[in-house]
Image (cartoon, rainbow, N blue to C red; front, side, top):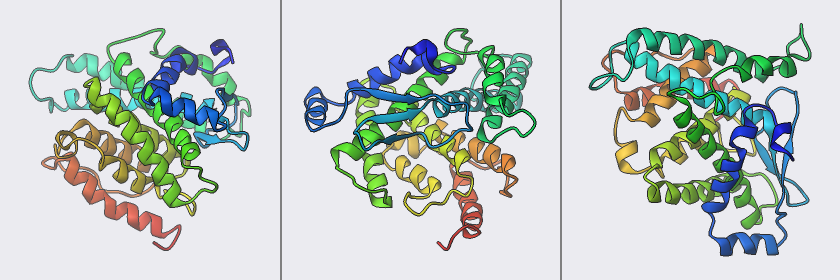
Length: 309
């Protein structure tokens, strides 16, 4: 499919997503998969429907990805990173000298907050305007993006690319392990394949922090699709996030205020606020890692309302 036909901002970054997808798999393994029936093509499902599951491996052995999910993930990566970083500047919690002034941070934060509000409307139909998804994209395209960069877009692009490559590698994992059904074990095995492949690339390029941030944000975007966090054929979303963290370098997962814990903490608050779910707020003297551990009890209580765990 021509990139110009894809929704914003998928066309701007998908070539880099596909390149990363192929780079992290050795040529021998990739060719073996193709020889065994995996189609070379990647099918984009372009739709103005509310955001749905990220991707799937079809019965024809084609990896199919939903382009509205790609768009949603991109916006989540940008908004969460900007709002998170700028909130630290505004609250004077930046270690060392901040790179922007409080006034600049407030401007960036307000813009990202407005963009996030638009992005969250992509999760459900707009009863008053059925064509909202299509009409809204003009507004979203005017926001900072790869084609109209600012100081944050390079990093948010990289996170989105890593997240989407993780989604594609997850589906590739289903193929190479010959999974015939969706089960929690199969899903975690596919997750492990994707994470390990991307982790190797992150180590080689000194970008492991960005790689894992993208993986975590891809899972967080999925949490917005499934607010109960629960499933019968998939592991719970929060469990998948915990599982992904196990593979991160100790310098990332042992640092109580690392980018990964900041992303999870901030995302949990936005997610809970959007779905009107009660979770505690972070304390002024609390590390982000400790906060992540503390909100786990709230998430477990929330999940109990949906299923027995």
